[in-house]
Each structure stands twice: as C-alpha cells, then as structure tokens.
Length: 255
Image 1 (tube, rainbow, N blue to C red):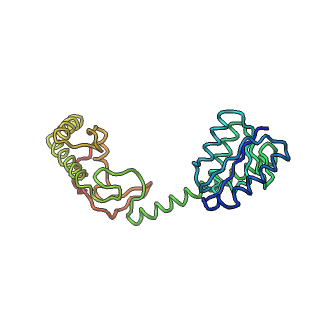
Image 2: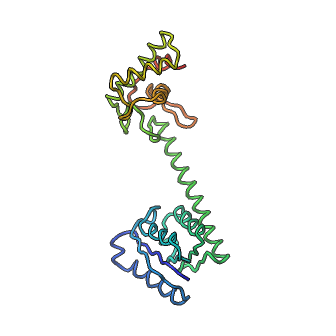
Image 3: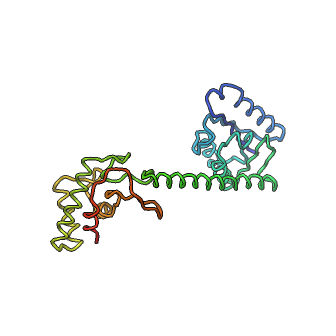
C-alpha cells in the first residue's frame, strides 16, 4: 500500500530536536512492520491551528496526482491542534478514498471502529466550530452594546478604524445635500440619480477610486451609521463615533 507520512511540530526549535525525528522513526517502523510502501515523509513546521500549511498542501498535491493509498500520522492531537481543521482534512481524505492511520492511537479509518472514532472527532469539531461562532457573536454583541462597530466592510466616509476620512466625508455630505435639493424640486428618483452621477463625475468624486454607480449612491443614502445609529442583527443602538449626517437630513432624502 503506497503511503505518505505527515509529521508536525509547531516551532522551528522543536524541529531541530527530537519531535520530527521521533515521529518519523515510529511511523517508519510501523510501515515496515505492516509492509507499507512508505513513499516519503512530509515534515510540517507550523502551528497546528493553521488550516493552510505547506506540508498539507504538498500532501494534497501528491494525493491528487494519484498513487497514494494511505496517510500515516503519529496522532491526531500532535498533527492537528484544531479539531475543525482535522475534520476538514479527514473529509478530504475520504473524498479521495485515502485511508488515514493514527499510529500511536492505533486508529485506522478503513476499520469500523476507526471510522467511528474519527467520526466522533469530527463531531467534536462541529461542536468546537459552533462554540467559536457563539463566542464571536457574543463578543460582537458586547461591542455593539458598548457602541463599537467590530464587523462588516469599511464604510465610505470613514477610515477602517472608523475615524472621519475627510475626502470621502465631503462627498457623502455633498450627496445627501444634493439629493435633498433635487428631491425638493420634484425630480423623479431615476432622474435624481442620473443627474447626481453626472455631477459627481464632473467634480471628480470617486468611490474607492472608481466612478460612482447608482448602487453606491443607494448604499450611502441608506447608511444609518452616518447619523450615529449602529445596527447588528436585531439590535439598534447609538455608536461612539463622529457622525456625518443629521438624522433630519437623513430622513428627508429617504423615499
């Protein structure tokens, strides 16, 4: 059976010690004892929490080139510190009909008990993923309730850390005032947008370096953050950042 070994340590210092050597020797002995054809041993010096690692990417390349029947690791916790990443790797091997063997734990995915144990580990991974998500949501809610924005893409008019971007802020204020002026003249909505796009181009105003599109204007006019409002899920509160537009003006331009 054509086999590749995957061994891992988390730091360069460990790689110079006994970690990789110990794992490699034990796996080699296991291969000889079971008459496996050990094609090579891939050494990974990386945090076990990383999903993308050079060693794993090399291994995937070998698998996709064909001729790999089995992957040997010393044990799951040594090779993967995150059960989420182990679960993804295990599913990848199953999709490519490659057996996984944890040498020190005596677990083989080709056997019923091994499939069950690896399945339990994958279930733990699902729980871990849900727990991480729950903590992230909880952290976001706490920040929102404290008036902080810690999610979502950059808002035009602000820097990435939510300070006023003077150049963009000038454009935001121009758009609101101009739309309000055109609305007072009873311009239909499509004409207001068309005329505004023309004015923005004439003034050299751009949206992230590109010409304004009608959906850029729409998104700006609907952005309550400019008025001091912070929204997340079903939570609406006031944020702690500088505002750009008064609530009165904001409400006046809404259709």
